Image (tube, rainbow, N blue to C red):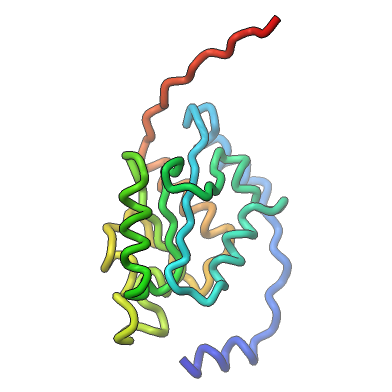
Amino acid sequence: MWKTVARHLLSRAAAPRTADPAVVKSLRERVGASRLGRSLAIRHVPAGSCNACELELRATQNLVHDLTQYGLSFTPSPRHADILLVTGVAGKNMREALLQARAAMPEPVLVVAVGDCAVDGGVFKGSPAISGGTDSVLPVDLLISGCPPSPAQIVQGLLSLIEANEFPARAVTPRREVS
């Protein structure tokens, strides 16, 4: 753990991130709102993290990465969510909260573990206070490693997961004209 702390303290600040227009265009073409037929909602559950992954998740919503342009958005309610996104070490005290959030979500549900801690426990691996990675509590569909992963990695991971799992379109009720 001290190696990681020292590496972060002694390293230089990262260069500012900018989105590559070619990558954004290809992602829009591959997974566009017209292909999905609807937007997908993400329920984020922090299961005992240091908040670094949460900061990167919030950066996916800024003007540079703009997760909403791909039809993805965060929701506070698991009942409206299609994707359960977990960050943190999956502490034993958070086990029940993860299971309840998953049980409240309608099928089909995709589970995503973001960050080294959610993948396998990270620097806390082997601690008696944690269960391990998210897969020790729930079956995981996508692992996005990194401490923390960049917003671009998170966006590309989510889009590749959606592309691999074709979601069926929900029935859309037609709008009525109000006179």
